[in-house]
Image 1 (cartoon, rainbow, N blue to C red):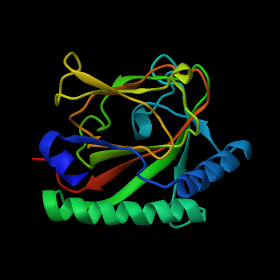
Image 2 (cartoon, one colour; image 1 turned 120 degrees about the horizontal axis):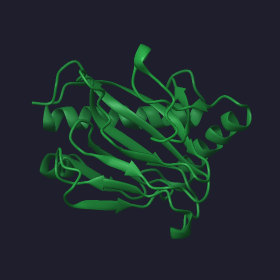
Image 3 (tube, one colour; image 1 turned 90 degrees about the horizontal axis):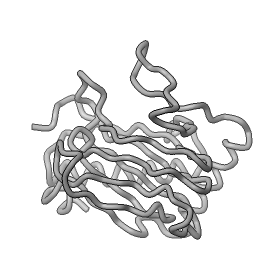
Image 4 (tube, rainbow, N blue to C red; image 1 turned 60 degrees about the vertical axis):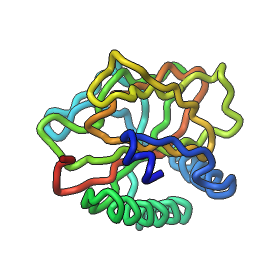
Length: 199
């Protein structure tokens, strides 16, 4: 993973989590969903945050890796190991991780965007873990990731949101979007953060 980030700024790993770990996260996600803990996702940050269903239609639940269920806590530990490995190789000075469960209902989507808010530099790497057992092409909801930094007109990859797959990319460099989901789609999406900007 670290070498992939070094070479091209993004990487996709199948089976980052084993089936038991992935199922545990999905179970905690659905438990919170049925409890009504999710809310409509917005765009922007702070006082400028607004609901824009023409841009994105998903529901989110922000997580605390230490105060959440055991599956989330275990995943946070794996992410911390990954953070340390990335810092040793790439010297990014990653400090912590923030993340949320994201649930796209049938018909949900997210138009092309970057993950770094305008005027900020804290989000360095995006990490998306997919939690969709028995996903099939007719379910839609693939990630479209443009592979040239800063370019959303050039080459891109389609990434299927299969259970246990992890995608990591530079948050401020790679445009991406979620195509319309035809079935309920689940992920745990988050960002490795730093006090310093990517050079």
